[in-house]
Amino acid sequence: MPKITFNGKETEFTAGESLLAFLQSRRFAVKSLILDWNGQILTEKDPLDTLYPKDGDTVDLFSMVGGG
Image (tube, rainbow, N blue to C red; front, side, top):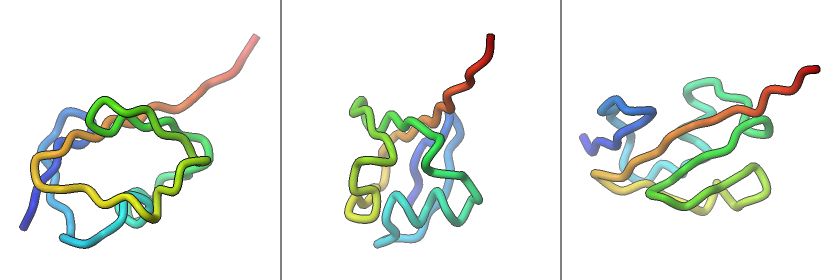
C-alpha cells in the first residue's frame, strides 16, 4: 500500500484516493484547514477532489484559530 508523510508520520493511503477523500476519511473539517502538500499551500478553495497524493508525498495540516 502506498504511503505519505502526514503531519510528520508515515501513513498508508488508498492508491487513486483524492486528497479530499483522504482528509474526509479521517474526519477532518476541510473548510477550516490549510494544507502544505509537498511545499504547495492549499485551502478549501483549491480543487482537493482533483489532487491525488503519490507514494512518498508529504502533507501537513494546519487549522486557523481565532481569538482575542
